[in-house]
Image (cartoon, rainbow, N blue to C red; front, top):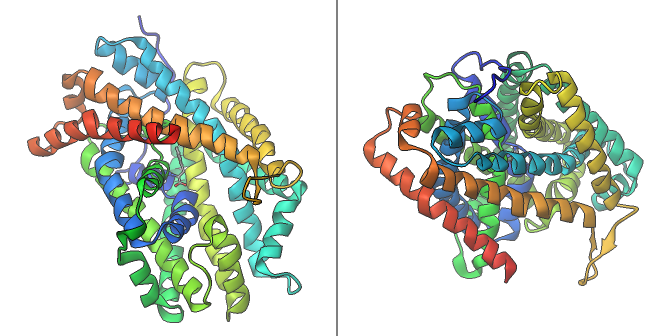
Length: 449
Ligand code: TRP
């Protein structure tokens, strides 16, 4: 017997799902993570492997998440449970929804701290401190727990306000404003790089592959990046799929979202690297690429006090349209079960993320540590990131692929994706049954060894 669950509503308009899912996908992962990883992992070779992962793992899992979500119309926990029970499989499959929610709480806890730093940088880049270098500036920002917690709180409250307002009036309405703005700012930054930066050098860096340094590490990092960037394996896309109108085409929509996500990652590279190369800065400087290298370029260049804030506003918008999708699955669950109202659910889960986020905020300063190579690290951030991004998220993605590939009844699947080309369907089945699960298993094995 299935009890009736509270409904959440649906996206209004054909484009809202695409905007919301792209908003979820496009985030710190694209604009902060992708360029610095491409920078440290050898440029174009990384980009190519990343593209391969998007096509053979990312898009097939995205199709699976959306179809599970849409057929039930519920939060990932209940969506997994219903699809399993209706396919004659065990209701234990709902655990995949639970691990997703746990992963989401961890991910949002540190995502919000980093996004808070982006908010802070809007102001820092607008009025740079003449006495400090960019790396001293970054040191000053991260050395103060009060400062980090302050911006973390602001970001968490923004996320909470949007999610509590619901699907149509909150998330749906916000993505219709945020996403066009994001596109506009990004194109502006790329054109700026074309005119004023070392654009050709950036192009050849991102598109001339050199496979000499490619190892298993490159594959792992590209696959992890693809999972994170497409928001897979924790229920963000499944939750959003639940609000997708029945007549919308799942397969082509997934391709659109995957392409837009990739396009934004590459455009972010084309916005950042021309500036980096024009000022002779290091493309492989790692996580500090936008906060240190790029800031130092903004500080030196003409109109940097204008271009810098534009860039960090862009980054903050991208982060906000993602954080709402990380919060949504858990909120949807508590609200549809009738335990709490949507607003109370949003407050409860945000508060939990906020508290755990204090660990990341203080890990930069009070509780920082030094690793064996003498570098200062944030042990708490590394721990929560490892649990959520390196283990729970690929695990969730793998379980979703296994469920749809091996356990979900094909008639239920075909009900959701009626008009697919038969060859494409076979290809998708193959990727979801074999390629995606085996790829993830190989990540895990190589992490152990
Ligand atoms: N994809 C987003 C980014 O690139 C972050 C994100 C949103 C996410 N939802 C997610 C990551 C779910 C993992 C799981 O920044």
